[in-house]
Length: 145
Image 1 (cartoon, rainbow, N blue to C red):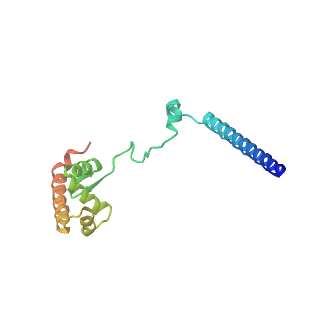
Image 2: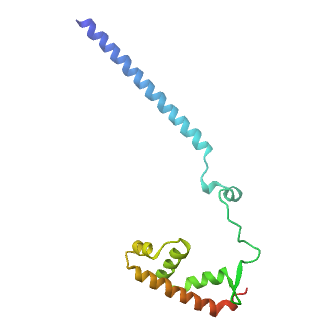
Image 3: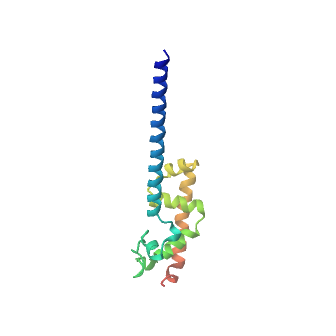
């Protein structure tokens, strides 16, 4: 009876040694892979300005050249003038105008988004439209630059 217990003990020891060897070798492999990966990586602070510039692009569609404008009722409307007109609106009215005209949301959808009555949205939109109209009429000739 002593002999089978001893064999079982030897098998356990051999299996234990095998598992330890596998884990040790796997840890070494992971360490080597990480070291290789770190040797290939570079921090942003180590990049040269030329390499940094290769990481992004800029939309140059409106850069330089002539500014886009259009004539309406004898007035020249530029993108700068239109942007300034929108900036004069209070935040709530500006958001309402942008959601309605540029995101094609209805008054009901905007009202649900802000959890306020639809009539409030309609009032904000129409009063904003009148305010924008007055601003553009008053300042259209001043923004020719």
